[in-house]
Image 1 (cartoon, rainbow over the protein chains, first blue to last red):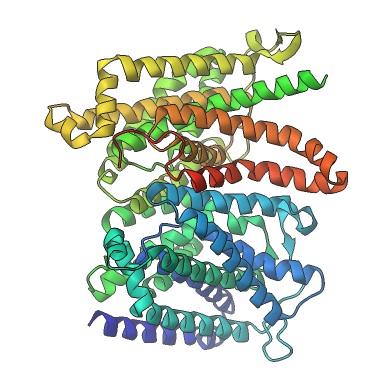
Image 2: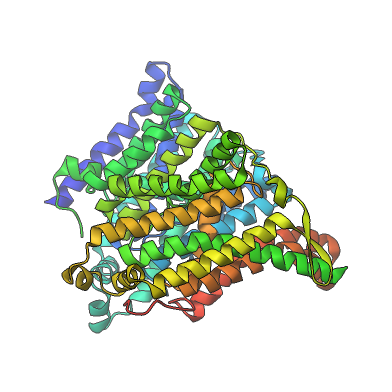
Length: 314
Length: 308
């Protein structure tokens, strides 16, 4: 029941996102293509965090680190004249997977608050590493000299083409993620979340499964980062700032944790809200902060929970 | 010459460690007793720094400013606890992290509305503006020496409070078994508010003393907050002794790393390479240290007793 609702939600969301560029073209508001593309890129990051946070119970507070690694994996080769997108995206995924492997291998030895803090600290470490990369702009960051080139197959300089590329990646990722959490692998992850000693007692070694999930989430975060660098055509260590990690986590909660479609909604609503509020006042965070508190206190099931009425997962 | 530099930087490390301890003590107490992860602890540090600077500006006296900022920050802490945090004690850590993250955004913005986004400067009080002589005759800023003394005095007072008084006994009892403490008739709500207020006042004190040394600006609490996390993870979450040791270790490693890593590296690798790698490595040093500690002792160096 819940899963068929989720399928419907996914199809509806996909269709709605697919009609954004034509509508933007009709109403002569190209700005919205840009805005929604940005939302979808963050949605990819939020969905990847949901995989480990919502299903695995791993409260990673350093997810923005992969965003940064992915962005630098595009920016640094481009700086040296290597603009092949296939190469850049592969590098983004590989580098963030490697980082997630190291971070996960150490962090997953702990749990609870230590896990939150150590993932935060690792992200912070990478943030300082980014600041110290003087060649690549230090703390000011640098312009992306050219967007990723895909040998004439895909032209990211065409806003709609780039838009549909991001949409396709998002849809494929959500569908794959959905299959993953329903698989035996996903079952072990969820079992480890609800009762780790029991999962161990029936013969699983949750550590490896959790680490694998952590690496998958990290590499997807890296992919989102690579797209983000192309989106903004600028990259700075700010991509890795810890408030960014908090924002991605908020997207997951706002949309509905452990639903995969929810975080997409969360990303869209949060960025829309930021857009609207920041147009009203420079001090928009004074509204956003209490809003966050209220969501956590009173709407824990998130937007997707409100929409679908499905029982909260876990 | 070299000795003087090493001694000066060691004292700086101690001074930074003392500030970290003031922050860590409150954070680790709040976590140990209420099981609350409070990201907004850095905001209280910021509030303390702003209030102290403002009060010092009005009264013309740094000491009076700091003395007024302490109860004021305590009050802010108590208000925040009663309005927002009380409902979070029973929630899971994810909720706590997000809700206090929201509070932190709120405080940063509130401060920038009240005082603007630019840094404001607090001046060193005139009676501490000079230098003292540290044996063997090395000059050291009197203000920083004063910070060390105040920090050590507060640490001793805190130890007396926690280990030697009835309130402290309840605090310790609350840390090991809060259900039992409330069953024995202790007003746990009041105890929680008290502990939170105490933590807020300590953070406010750290902020007030930080004013003349570091820039007072919105978001100033975040950098130190993350380092304080490192401190309490290294020391063992919920343990004051751990916070003490962790704070000194982190303060020393961070300060000495920033001062000496580059020249030390230059003796091993080429100086231009050391120029680049030194500062980067120095700012990552404490995180590497934390990763190493957690790898060998996931519970931290001094895990608090009575916690599972």
